[in-house]
Structure formats: structure tokens, C-alpha cells
Image (tube, rainbow, N blue to C red; front, side, top):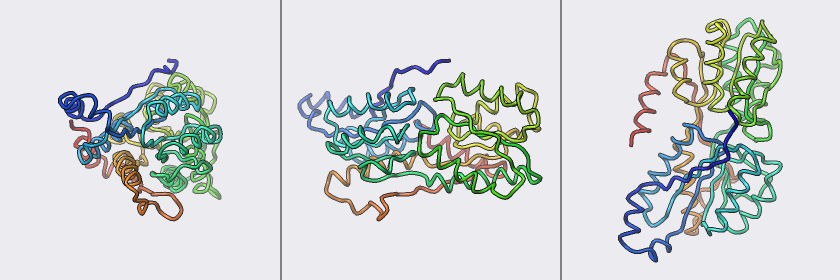
Length: 321
């Protein structure tokens, strides 16, 4: 399946649109718009959207949008950002796909509007702050889970959309730090450019090329479910261990049935809520929320068979309309 370049703009809370119609277009146009731009279409961002909805309820005098794009490239995000600048938005939060090649565009945005990053940072840019995970630390957490799953060591492979993203590089770094000096051997990191068909092919090829592979780990939210499918299709469930990231429903199902050992989950709800509310604070002249190192870290958690049922119930509540 080739990744589509289409995007979805989600205006949060239909009631806000109804209010705008009732009070006239002129009044609606006076509202400042805030947008969160994703790096991929995934359930992860649906959860972040719920956090935006909470912010929208608290700040009805703003328009808050979730902009979902399936194109995981710097060029795709550049088009989104250019469109937002043309629209004159007041603030943007973005999960940066390719930080090294996005700096010029991000600096252009930062000169015209309040810009923060979330989920994946671009620290070399002029963004105001980063809100999200300490991805090196999250990688170490995953590395500890890998060591726990392979007490006697073994070969592992990692899968991620692109190593151009800061969160990908940092998670790999953390995993390497955690497994250093052990009998766990990393054979390679496989990228797929957010092409699900390519990701699936990568996993199937690894299972064939490395018949003694002991564990596969997906570093972005869509990859662990694809690993789950690939391992089951190859008849290697239970033989090839899986450690993942994020809280896709198939990932949680795999933990429940014992196919997946564990997953490191972030708090995308907080990413959405904190992005919107802190942009609004900034627009109102309050920058006291920005830490000295410009990184507002949201903690991660390991989900395994011991706590997956409780976590799944919590997630169900978050996703309720």
C-alpha cells in the first residue's frame, strides 16, 4: 500500500462551528486558530485530538484544529505549514518528520507565529519549546524490556518510519545504551518511510533472512501491530518476542494474548492538551510554562500483561465521544 498524500483537517467540537454560524462569519473570523500537525495518520493522534478537544472546551474563543497527514516526509509537512501560514494561524504544534531538512521551514514559521514541537523535536530550529517524551529515556525503557524478554541474549531487529526524525534516532540511541555490554545483538534498524506495505515486507524479510532472530521491536505506533501480524502469520508467535511503542489496539491485544511482551506508551492526550493550552498562554504573554532547557517532558509508562487490562479501560474512556 502506497502512502497517500491526502490530509484530514479536524475542527474540534462541532458546536464551535454551529456557534460561528449563529453569530455570523465576521465574528468567527476574529477567532485565532491553533493547529497541531501530525507526522502520520494513527490512533496515537486520535488520542492527542481528545486532548485538543478538552482545550477547545476550555477556550471557546479559539479555533483549535488537528491536521492529520499520511505523508511522512519533510516536503509533505512543508506544504501543511505553508498552508497554515497563508491562513494566518496564531500558533502551531508539530511532530517533526525530518528535523535536519525542516529547519529552514520551521524558522520561517517561528518568525510569523508561535511554534512548538511535540512528539518529535527539532532542537536546532527556532521553535519555542518541545512538549513530549524524553525519547532517549523511552528507548532505554524499551531496552530494559528487551533485556528482560531475552535474559540469555539473542539477535534483535528494530523498525521505524525514518531515522531522519529525532524521536527515532533518540529511541534507537536509548535502546543501544541499554543493551550495551549484554548478549543482545542488534542486527539492523529497518526504515519504511511510513509505507505500511514496505514496513510489513521489512518484517517478513527479517523473519526469513534471520531464522534465529529472537526479538522484533517497532519504534513508531503503527509498526508494532504490523510486527504482531507478521510474527503470527509466520507461525512464530511466542518464539520471536516483541517489544513495542505506543498503544495501538492490536498492540494491546497482543500483550493480552501473550504474543507481545510489552510496549512503552507515551501520553498523546497530554501532548494535544498541553500544546494548545501553552500556545494560548504564550499568545496571552505568559511564557512561564517554558522550562529552562525548553523541553516540557511528559513521562512514559511500560504496559505489560500485568497492567494492560487497566490501561485499556483507561484508553477506552479517553476515546469516548
